[in-house]
Length: 141
Image 1 (cartoon, rainbow, N blue to C red):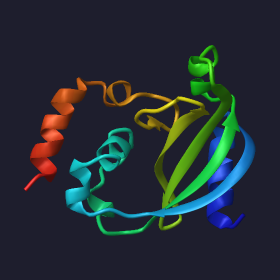
Image 2: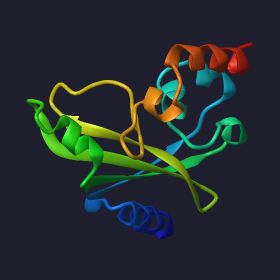
Image 3: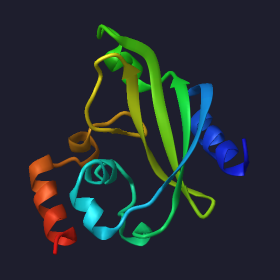
Image 4: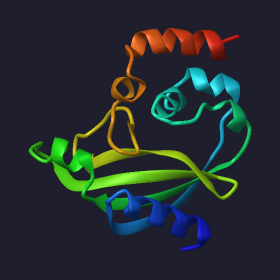
C-alpha cells in the first residue's frame, strides 16, 4: 500500500473499524452534468464536502473490507449478507474528503451509504426529495 492507502487505513482504524483486507484503488472523476445522474448524485448526497471543487478532477478511492461497521449490525440478520462491508475512502491532494460504505452480499443492492453507514436522508438531515430539488436546480442547466 502507498501513502494514500496507509492514510485511509489509519483513518478507518481511528474510527474503530478493523481492516479485513485492502481491495485496491479506483480513480474517480466527474463533470457537472454527471451530478444529475446515478451514481454521482447518490455518492455526493452522503459526502461531508460539496462536489464543486472536485468537478473535472481526479479523486482517488482507497477500498477496504472492514469489520465493526454499523452496516454489519443493520444487515446482520439479512439472508445473503456476507458480514462484510466495503468502505471506499475518497482522497484528493493527499487529504481525505469523504467516502462511501456498502454491505456485501447476494441480492444486496441500492444507494451507497456514508462512510459511517448513514443513508442520504440520515446524513443530510432533510427530506431527500427536497434536497434533490435543490440539487437539480444548482447542477442542472
